[in-house]
Image 1: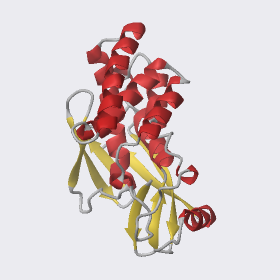
Image 2 (image 1 turned 180 degrees about the vertical axis):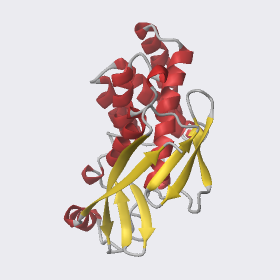
Image 3 (image 1 turned 30 degrees about the vertical axis):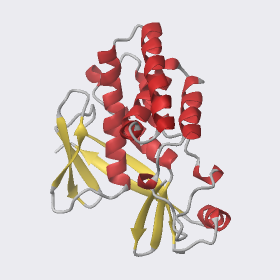
Image 4 (image 1 turned 120 degrees about the horizontal axis):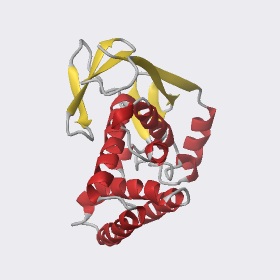
Length: 242
């Protein structure tokens, strides 16, 4: 989960809500630049964090009793397997992109985590087989994944409120066309992206979050209870071509 400390308490955004926002940020991509498997690409972007269902987990709190932010997490074999099983139940192509995302996120742990290294090495072999079966080149797969990574980065930027005031630009990521894209806040609630990668000149995106005023939780049961009772807030942005 994504955890922000605010004046009102902990703001919690689930990984699946973040994935939905990422898919919204992809859905309006310029038509000529869309992949040949566009629907599956969108599903992969939406689903890449679907295995993270926080309320079904137990390791949600720090030793001090605060909620665990996603940046504090390390590779977990069960999560890796669950992600691939979920994705593969839809299609090999979706599983391919999700596997590439696991490599992107956890590849840095190869040298320090034997379990992660073994899993990722096995995935590299599996991805090669999937590309062969799908008649998809490594370059084409990488281009499709680069869009997933770009939307993931943009979604995380918004969920963590990293957009800058006073029209200052912040880099999102390098897109599938190897261009560097920046997010600029035009005014409160309105953003633009340069260069503009979208089909429409303006559209809305949103994510849902919850504020938990309690800063310390005795255990996961108390945290889940407070999370489930919390009011749901819809955070909306207008994206507009500048």
